[in-house]
Image 1: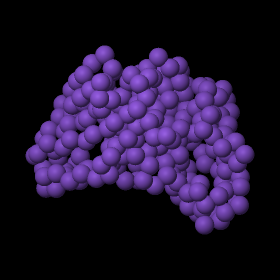
Image 2: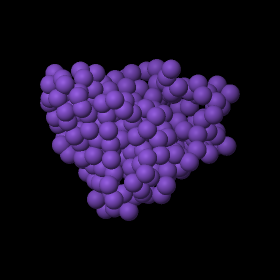
Image 3: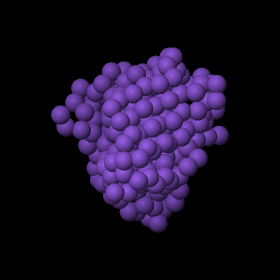
Image 4: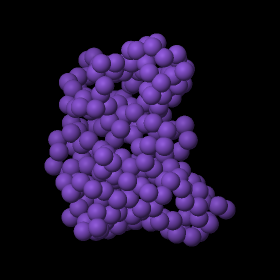
Length: 114
Length: 116
């Protein structure tokens, strides 16, 4: 039972354009969502997060949108840069939990072409 | 600030052999996590420590996997005996305060295990 799904294994965009990465979840208890970025041979690094009390969170070129009714979130990167080429993981958790256990999606490989 | 350290970076073993991974978290981080990432999947939590106590090990295959965190700092994860399906990257992560959703988890580079 995969509670967090990233249905697009890969995405290719041109430098300067917008990249949109999608994530769906099934567990209605999830109320805190995160995006991690992973380069080859490195561990994932935290990128941006959003609480369910918000529908948008922005940090520079990165914006995460949350649609609770659809159980869907997306990460927008504008403008995309070649250095953004990496694997992006969506993760979800129950914010009130005392463990902080993260449930990850399968990841989407983003390629930004110069 | 030094990041999460893991060793070895790569390991190749034959099935039924044993293997151990080591993790040194960021200094002062109370919470330590071990994840398993199988190719094409996202990381899956195996075990979480808070200081030297286990918080969550619900997804750890306890018949073959074991982990310890002595003195609440370094941790080792052991597999004995290994199976083909254990081939994966094993990631260690740490967070500053006792685990909560708001605490950022910092990941090490991982140990890539291949079981032949």
